Length: 445
Image 1 (cartoon, rainbow, N blue to C red):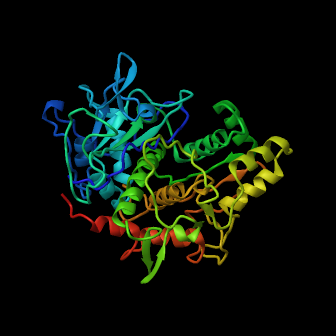
Image 2 (spheres, one colour):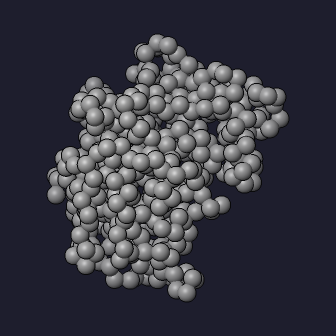
């Protein structure tokens, strides 16, 4: 497999909170057992056309050796519990994932849209189940990581090695990690949406711990329904697919930025007309730049005087302050949340230029905007394995404490002329969208 990313030491965790036990997975053919570790190559491929998901689970999924890496130290090797400056690639455990873990990953793969399958096969070397649950406040997380030896490496070149090396990385591998707790707890899409908002409030400095941030979310939000067609309970698989899409979104964004080094703003064509993804909502961000050498916690990065939204939305700090100072329900905080998420509508294709953003996370920074839009696209195109040709997810919106609702972004997609509508088309235009561009960079292995 040839991986095109050349970004050094980027780790992009998604931080969650543990839930309750995972219900039994819906009835789908179980993934076959993995081969012995000793027979596994360093880098593997899979087929995105593998309908039973055995290729993905067998080729890509590994247990991460416990206490072997520390993402906060850029994957420096831990010696006696202390990080040093020697880099080692992630190390697979000699144990194998449990059948329940494989079955849930299997089902997440089955419901994923084909283009997400293709990105996982082509652009990610391994998906690690992280037994250490690398995180703060004992919360769940995910991460993605790029290796690089020579920054001058070009697309479609691959240098594979497991030898230790000083510096940010060894080889050009791309890895995704998902906390084992995600697989062992019922983490649904609506759980993740609430937890994202919680993390945003915490990172804004308005509150100082997860418990206070959770209480603040409850002051504003009554529910975030993320409903599927109801025929089978796919909630845990839908949440896992969202996490895979989120971490893959960071991989895809940087690969597109690398492929378009001489272009501005991630160029695409919609109906044959050239435009850019970032030009819809951002100014001062003409050329995407990799984030190197530090952990990217969800919502951590925010826009600044050089890179700002064209129409600055309310900030997480502002909304949190309004919620803390407002009544019950906090009217001003709900108003500002509605400004971001868009007002409820019963018209599938209204002409309003709202919403501009998928959620509050997308307002934080250009790359967050790309990844959240990529995730919405994955949710909107998730497949129903029980009804071939049918889409799985039907609804995704916010119900506030005053009983008003935001726009349902799946049932009523944003208008084509809205900023979010244009960004979604820029991603998935069938001829010249960014997803198609990435697929065309390299033939299947």
